[in-house]
Length: 599
Image (cartoon, rainbow, N blue to C red; front, side, top):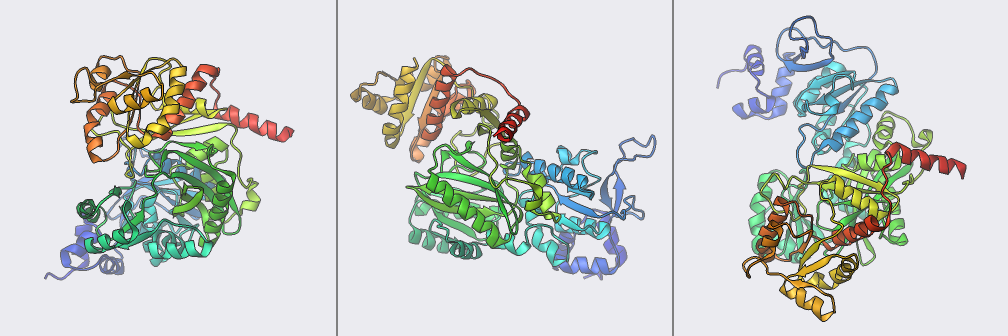
């Protein structure tokens, strides 16, 4: 094997080879390559992005790396903070994290720090030329970030605002002596590592669904048998619920394991008992290691099993009992203090039969931070950055749980009209954005959210309902209310018979392949205003696919869960009985503050 020299190493780096690639070529590890390169003082240089096309010298402070002989990035003597962005926008890692990074940059600039942004996506606000004092267009890898820290020598680096991508760099950065601001790397690992997290739950007294971990197919089958089907399985350390599934039998688990290994080959698979008929709650909070602020408790509208990024949610919660809310608040504070969180933390809970279970704790910013911040008027990401820089919550004058001046509903936006995929939601995230509806009542807030998401609810017309047998009793009162509002009901054979026995008037309609005209025919001809469909089981999901696909193609609003159907009925009643008005977030927050000061 040819001997490695400084000249060869520099030439390879100039050609674009990363340390990981060079290590793979020689059968070494990345650390060995880096140490050798650093011993020869081989580091990248940084060039200014030429926004002036060479016409005159560019003054814009953003840079990209190369391995040339002269660097155009000159570090200042000011106290600096580096913020790691979220990288490319993709499902599971969206613009919500970029919002958090931008808010942090603005807050730290106001506090007198020089702010340095590292991100590789030019389509984000964080990479606008006037947001940070300095911007590096670099991949979010350990190698690239370490080189920037080596050059800039900052007070610290913030990893918890850009989502999972920068969070995964925390351990490597700390091992190289980088000053990671905020929550410690050990605390992050205690939340991410299944065994250590179970220990944390025991300490704070939190209930968790039965669970286990597996590194092989045989081990996964053994864990699933012990827990009992159905189980929720997912690879650890992945984004957006990638490769997460609800598994009902052993053959499905065996098929799944191959996919999980592809998604996260060097991590174990997490296996949890799936809590059917439960609903979920999300909590975002701030902590400085001593005090805790509950930013907001959000109740999911969809049932448990739908990814939190896809589920509509409401703030404040409208169905949780007072006892459940108090337990959620208490558990959140205990988790934050036990982990020693400094900055933001998100906790996801499931509630079934009045019992609160904790699903996961994320000691970082979550994708709901923008929603909660706008609903309450409290800039959580800005406050978190100031806490990470050394300030205390007691100095920031934030209430323990900021009030919401009304009801805010977050709804996910989906790309179903652009891709030939089914509209049924599950544990793997599929949304590409989100919208917000705000009003004095839940019904009107939900209606506004649906309009914003392009799923406009009809105020009259014909409703087709085809639900699984388990949902018939639940949906019937909702159908009575729709009938009272003047909607005409159409139901498939089994549902039609059930409604007829209860005295609810409905027209019978054929399923696909039962006869003509069937549901799809009615959707295509434009005489259907709303579709309610809750399939159960693989065969039913397959049979109903054409119907749901037709609804997307022809712009017919659709509902696939009972909880969403109930919320939609509330919205339709509000549209009939409430005067619609539009108020800006600023007006709503300001009026609430005036009322609070008056009291």
